[in-house]
Image (cartoon, rainbow, N blue to C red; front, side):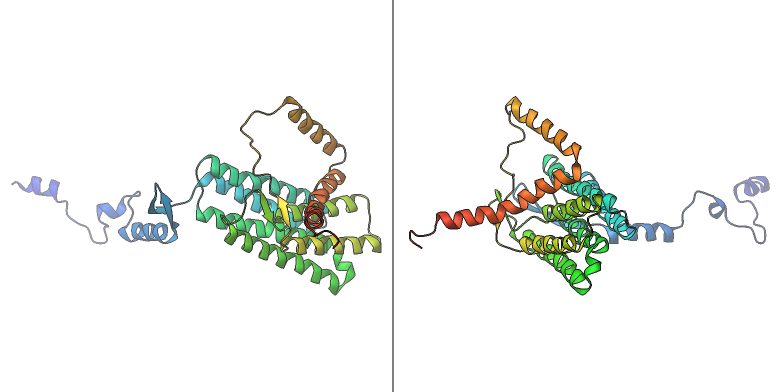
Length: 293
C-alpha cells in the first residue's frame, strides 16, 4: 500500500482535534439515549386488564376519554380561580361546563371501548375538584365567609361529604342497581350550589336571609351526598333507540325555556331533582307503612 493510500484512509490526527463522530451535529450519546429511555420506562402507566377472559398487562393510557376528563378538570380549576377573583357568574358556568364534560368522558370511553382503571381514578380526582372543592369555595368566597366560622365549617362539610361520596361510589361499582344512585350524585349537588350562587348573585341577593339559605343549601347538598337516599340515574334510558317526535320537540322547548333565564331555570331543574330523592323516599315509606301505624 502506498503512502498516499494510507494518508487517505487514515488521515493524521492533529493535536486537540475531535474525532469525526463527535463533531456530527445529529449524533446522540449513549448516555442521553439511556436517560430518555429510562424516563419513558419509569413514567409509563402499566395496569392489569381482562381481555377475552384473560388477564393482560397493558401499557399506556387512552387519549380520547382522558382529554374530556382533563377538560373537566380545567373547568373546575377555572371555577376556583374565577371565584377567588370575584367573578361568580363565570365560576358557576364553569361548574356546569365541567358537569357536561364529566358526563361525556365516560360515555366516550364506553362507546370506543377505551375504559381503564387509570381513567376511572383520573375521573374521580377530577370530580373531587370540579364538584367538591370548586362549589364549596365559590359559595364560601361569595357569601358564606360573611357568616364567620359557621360558613367555612359548612363549606368544609360539603367538601368532606363529596370526597366520601366519590370514595363510596368507587367501591360500589358493579354491586348496586344501575338504575339508582345511592346518595345525591356529586355533579348534581355541585349544580345546585352553582345555580344558587349564580341566581342569587345575579339578583344581588346578599341579605342575611339569603346567607342563611345558602348555608342550608350547601349543608343539605353535602349531607344528601352521603345519605342512603336513592336518586334516579337515567342510565336505563335507551339513547340509541327510536323515540316519538314529541320527545325531540320537548327537548327543544326545554332548551328554549332554559335560555330565557338560565340561572333560575337551572336552579329550579336541579332543585327539583335534589328534592325528588327525599320525596320519593317518604312516599315509599308511607306506602309500605303497616295499616293503622
